[in-house]
Length: 183
Image 1 (cartoon, rainbow, N blue to C red):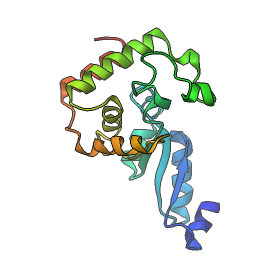
Image 2 (cartoon, rainbow, N blue to C red):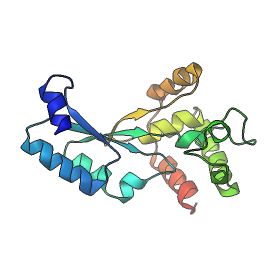
Image 3 (spheres, rainbow, N blue to C red):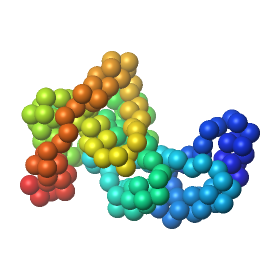
């Protein structure tokens, strides 16, 4: 009702939700449809390393029902950068915050995945963050990403994703092999 009121009062153009699973998204969509309130977006965590929206069905549900997905944490709290390849920097989120990414998340296995993904990104002529963002945006189910940059130059660098070439089938298979363990 609060979302509907915000739209009907002119304070918002449409309704959006954050972190709703498939069932809750469907329930919100039904309520907002009944209220004739435009519902266009669900904000969810999504990255090469976090496929929860694929696994819980919200990505396909959203696509089938004309609801966009805005992906947050597309760089997996910085893991899909080269930041952690040579240790944990003092200015990293692990050291300064630690709520969402813990030192224990940076395993040898994860570091190996990051190295292999970084190699693939270099082959594509882009940085690892650019490739990770391009991966999130590879199909129309994801309408936008929230990059969460901590430095202005990261924004400029990450916007180069707009120049990324489409992935080949072989590149997508390599990413799956790297992340799912079967190369």
